[in-house]
Every structure is written in structure tokens, then in C-alpha cells.
Image (cartoon, rainbow, N blue to C red; front, side, top):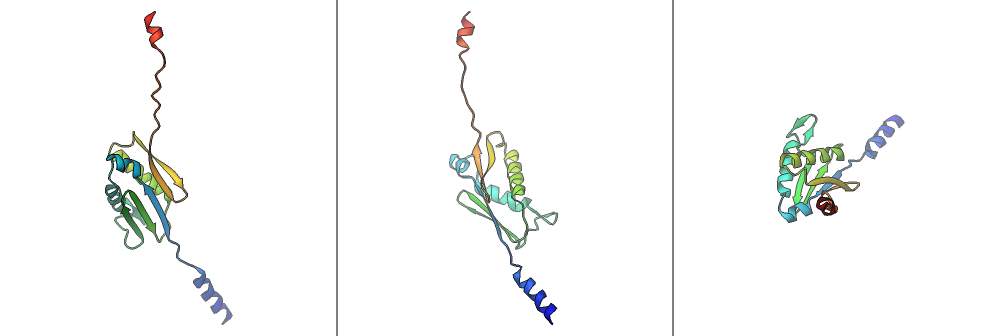
Length: 129
């Protein structure tokens, strides 16, 4: 009887953990080069569960609010996988040369522009002589 109660307690202690990740697309959306809804649709179509795409069921939810894509998961899910899929989306839309995916917090990614320094050196003095 005691062993049965211990097993019951262990089962009760297991709680469902819900993971929540966000991808912030504010800068590219404001500039009009990316649509957050397209990214959310891409995620819905490409996220694999148990090796199968389109197998999201009720385990994983993808939502888009304005310029932020939110992914919630009831099953173990890797944040790194989201970065991989986001980079694939950017490459598909030829935006990979301009945008990068940066972790802004432990559960969030942000799309940022590359910092390009257009510093021109003084080559004009060399050309004159």
C-alpha cells in the first residue's frame, strides 16, 4: 500500500511545462521588407514534431501579434531550432544578407540589421600623385 502511494505522489509532482518563445520582427516589418504573418505561416508549415512536418496538433502553437511571432510548446522544444528555421526563411526570401537573428533574452530572438560601416578612407591623396 505504501509503494502505491509513493508512485501516486511522483505522478502528481510531474507538471506540464509550457515553453514560450518569441521572435521580434519589429525593425524589418516597420521598413516593409518582411511580413510577420508570412514568417508565422512558414513556421507552421516547417516545424517538425516526431520527425514529421505539419504534425503540430495541440502540442505547438504559432501566433502572430503585430510584428512579434510567438511559439508555445507543451512538448520539449529547442530554441535553437527556431533560429535555424528563421534563418532558412530569411535565406528563402533573400533577406539573409541584410538581417541576422540575435538572442535578445533567454526565450526570445530578434531580427536585426547588420551594422555596415561605410567609412571611406582618404584614397584621393594617393590618386593625385
